[in-house]
Length: 121
Image (cartoon, rainbow, N blue to C red; front, side, top):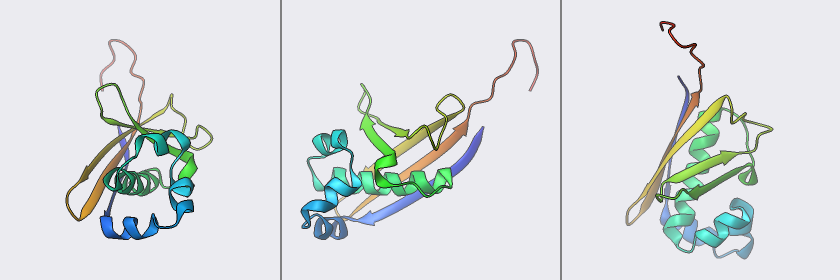
């Protein structure tokens, strides 16, 4: 069951200017994300995705509370600190896209509902 939805878009030039400060990337990306995000588009995509996730979850998260890395198929997989989001009860789906001037991300928060075998919805 979908219980949260968030979207965010950012201009790549805005992130490019912010990246001139060497502390910026370390502030918004985890160590693993820093190793993966070697391009402006990837950094901007993570910014947009983390903003979208905060909107979907409805909580004030820090940049380090959320980590977004590719799964084995290359799709972005989001992990939120378990102190904010129980991974047994909730699942996040994230999509990130970018083009020449913008990066955009959408996040969907699903509550996992247990259904007993043979029961009707």
